[in-house]
Each structure stands twice: as C-alpha cells, then as structure tokens.
Length: 384
Image (cartoon, rainbow, N blue to C red):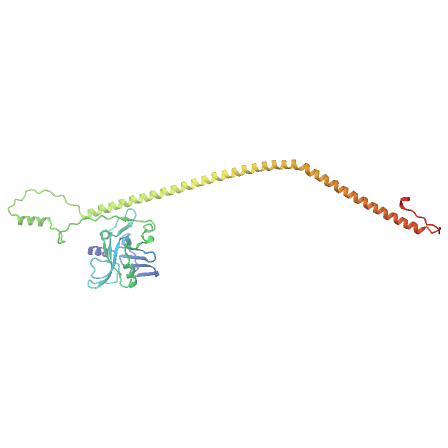
C-alpha cells in the first residue's frame, strides 16, 4: 500500500481551499454521542459514534480536482479496529497536518481497520473525469484502496483522547449499525446525491518469491543457455500483447461512467414520473372535490324543497282540523264572560237602586213632621 499512500499524498490542486485544514475538531455533543472530524492537507476523516443507539459511521473525503471522492466504511463491514503505533510511513493513509513532519523512524498513532468487505468508493452521480495526470493517479490510488480489506490510517496524537480511542475501537459489525444521516448518499454534492463506484480488482501475476517474472529477452537468453543444440525457429509466432493495466482501468472507468449516466437517467425518469403522478393526483382530487360539492349542494336543495312542501301540507292539515274546535271554544268563553258581566251589572244596579230608595225614604221621614201622635205613616218602596 506504500504506492497508494504516496500517490494520495503527492498531488495538489489549484482549486483546493486555501484555508488551514490542519486543525482537528472533537465535538462532544454529550457523553453518549461523539462527532469527530480530523482535517488534513489532502483528506478529511469523519468519525461519528452514538453509543445510545449503537450506531456509527466512518468516512474519508479526498479532493480529486474538481470533485470530492469519499471512502465509506460502514460498521457492518468492520471486523475490528485496533490502535497501533507504527514506525515508518509505508502502507499508511495519512490524515495529518501538512505542518507535521513525519520521520521514517518516528512512531505514528494509527487506526487499523480489519474489514469483512472492502470500503465503498463514492463519487458524484453522472459523468465525471479527472482533469490531469495527478488527479488520474489519485483516482487510481483510491480505486486500489477500494479493494482492500485492511486499512491503516494515521491520526494526529492530539486529535483523540484515550476515551475517544476506546470508543472507536469498540465498533464492530456484531453490535453496531450504520447511522442513517451519515450513510445516505442523497445529501452529498449539494443535494444532487452520490453513487457507489463499483471497482473490479484486476488480477496481478506474481511468482512465489513475490518478484516480477522475467522479460521476454531474458527468457530467450535462458533458452539459449539451457538448450544450445536446439535449433531456433526462423519465424516466431507473433503473440498478441495483453491489454495494459491502464487500458483495463480506462475500461472500468468508462463502465462506471456509463452506469452513472444510466442511474442518472433512471433517477430523472423516476422524478419526472413522480411529478406527473402528483399532478394527476391533484387533478383527480380537484375534480372529485368539485363533483362531490355539486352533488352535496343538489342534495341539500332537494331536501330543503321537500321539507318545505311537507311543512306547508302539515300546516294546512293542522289548521283545517284545529280551527273549528278553537272557534267553538272561543265563542263559549265569550258567552261565559258576557253572562258574568251581565250578572255583575244587574247586581250592582239593584244595590244602587236600593241605596237610592233608602236615601229618599230617610229624606221624606225627616221632612214630614209628626202630626199624628197616635200613629206613624210608614211606607215601603214596594208601595210606591
């Protein structure tokens, strides 16, 4: 992996942000959740832990001009994470400050990931190509990383505390799961989403000692030394050259680009169909609402008309049945009251006449002197 680390650490871009990326932030939300970001010159590692829900996620961002490429390390792929102090920089992916000088003999604080599956290489959706040789080499190095199952990452000593290291090293596929907000690809690249780039590892031929096989010229010399008496053919059969690794890499890259374009077209078609379905649903809902409102209004009118007709009929029937009885009762009441009034008037008139007659009798008796001593003249009102 030394060539991979060297390639990733060697390229630079004019579009890289000029801000100081050497600072590392360890943001502790509470004792149960940690979000740790370590920024280096060429890469940024983001480690998220939520102990309460046993969710975590690790990702490393690289800037391949003019894009950012991510390496996703889901917890489901992690067999173990070990903190190691390694001497030398061979085979180490650096996420450290550009001002931090590394010696080949100074120990490095590293996190060693042992994975059951390789990391996920994530790029932008659609057609993307690096602009220069340095970017092409960096992308090729990332493709080599994407087929590895062992990854060693150097961390600045001041970035993590012992508590952080202990929490990170406890993550494994047996008890931890991916945190949804960090594992989703929809929020990447300003909301345009990302895609997983599929990498097919190219077979490499090595002998038992690990050295490269001898060239064709050396093989010819060995043949001449081993078999000096064997006649050499005048014409040698032409052997078609095998495709170079660059050609295979280009083919894989073109294939990934085509897959990205197809995915982009499918996503666009899906969005268009969804928009049309939403519009159709709105039209159907509006039409159904209007039809239902009209039917309800018509039903209301019919009910009101029928109610008014029934009410008028009922009023007519009630009046026809009740009016004679009411009038008869009224006349009876009127006659009774008239009789009462007449009787009262007669009684009052009789009392008045009696009172007047008594007054006249008293006046007459007072006016006539008593002339007869042997008798009194008496008369009653009935004698008049």
